[in-house]
Image 1 (cartoon, helix red, strand yellow):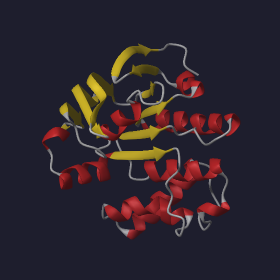
Image 2 (image 1 turned 135 degrees about the vertical axis):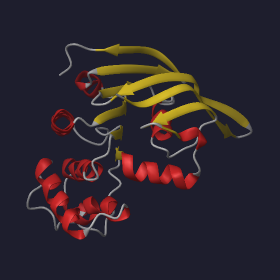
Image 3 (image 1 turned 180 degrees about the horizontal axis):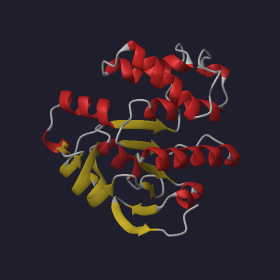
Image 4 (image 1 turned 90 degrees about the vertical axis):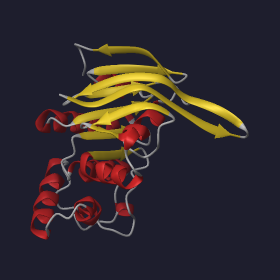
Length: 231
């Protein structure tokens, strides 16, 4: 089943009285359960594409259909609801709320979508177990290593059971050993839950783990390869 369909996607930015063409007519489709990396150098447009799919930014032209909804035709409030219910995010800077505990950071998205307190407690406990953070529910982010904080971010993305998880350079702030552990964890969860993972990256290790590798350069798709020998 197609979970994301991008057609002739264009994104322009104004910068110092000039127009920057971040994306130039991108066409891509993603199926349920994919584990895909979008790779390219800095400024290639990969993060811009993820932000558009995640309804964090708006299109200049073209369309992106997420879960059957055409985001090009949606108002800001509708985009926020789609993002809140259907999409999980993992960022390179973790983006945890420092004054909240681990369990509070993880459960926060469930509070926003109106899940009852009993289910919040159950789902938070389960996802803590899934990411290997049992016993750390009461810690604050500053009391954890970078790898542990990224596990919290993964748990927060997973807890609302989204169809899609967008991971923007998720290993950028981790050493290679911890980065590999994080990728193994995400691959395990991808296989267990069937959640679609889409990464933006310039990390070769992420590219090696991906089952599909899309290369982007200067805002255009350079290649799109489904691999048989992914890690």
